[in-house]
Image (cartoon, rainbow, N blue to C red; front, side):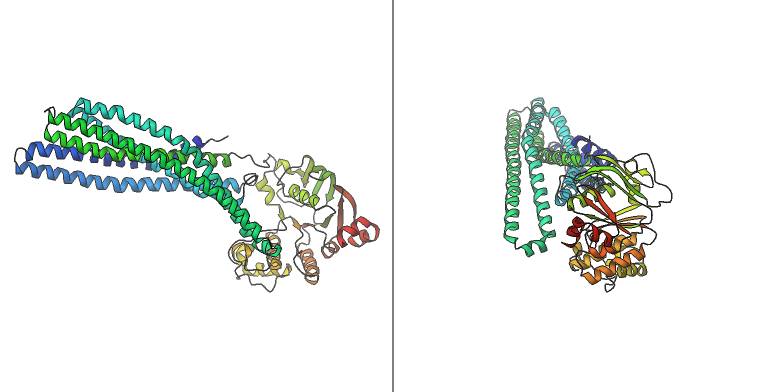
Length: 551
């Protein structure tokens, strides 16, 4: 079980080289910044007070060299830090995507697609920014350390003020970041949910318009968006409160330091140059202290995002792999023995290799449960599903996908050309398009986002062509022609049978045209196989079957 700390540790450890060199350069930049007022004070004491132009020119030269080093350190240190943050965020995105696409599934069980996208984008970015915060924190602490040493050498009381006050400010900033961390987690969760709802509504826009449900959809998103806005405002208020309090305390701290330095200069305890250096260091300290306040806020948000990333990466797979492998040459014999899953009850069925079989279910839920078992999206509650005598629960899901393809009824098309969605060369794409009843479509035609440039029937036929082009030993089709007319449906049924000759094909449907093209039909009723025969025979002898397919 991963934790947010594990995610942050891995992100930081994976970029330790860049982070180390970047921190070193950042520390050099802050050390140089802290030395600038010290050098100015020394120039005042040794050159201005002594009216020595030669020494003044020397000190100006030293300042020029220091400023050159500052510029170099900041430029390349920041570049390394930004690169480390970007690389760490990229690695987290890749890990999240790999988990979502894992053959075992399970990552999207309780999350909308938009929520998953939020984890892979915004949460990954915030975790990556933790590296930039670490770099900036190390640099700021270095500046504070140099300033403390210089002030201690100048005046022990001034140094003690810094040494005592700085840890107190850091501790207070950390305590103030706790509410921000909690509210940031809620903010991210609410924003991800709003994004998921928006993506869901956009995907179903045509359906919403067809049902006339636009008003209800807008109201649903308005409520979700308001909740997200409220969470964002709460997080923003927490961040503003933290920054305001820390800034006020920092100002008071610097004023106290300047007052003490002025008092010591007035009574002759320190020189004029040392007083100038002390005031300059007091002003300089505002930068590191503000940086540390920003670091606290960034780390608080990073911890919240890391916890969300860890929760996703720790989701157990819906199905796990076993130690067995399928035969080198998969024949395609499918057998279910005593399978219970969902509405299925002790289901037994046997599909020989190479058979073109149709399965008609009186209850649509039985069809869905069967598809989940055949595609191994879930293992049955009891019983076994076998392919060529090998139980699927003992086979790695990735290896199973190479032998069995379950083409869902609502398959998604990806932005690009039809040929890109199908795969293979243009000639083979044209062949499977013709078999799927979409011969009028060019493989070069663009489908648009989620297939929006095509009609519903065209999208369905392109998805069928994609399944046919895969050439798996076992192809399971779920209502592949529900959006086409009866003539096209009959032609597609015969084309699929011809193209898949010698390969196992299972068509889960109640379409008479597809049922008639099968070698035999298995009729599921009550969670079991109630009857099995060619389509015409079942129509003649089974009244329940007639009601299921002709209603």
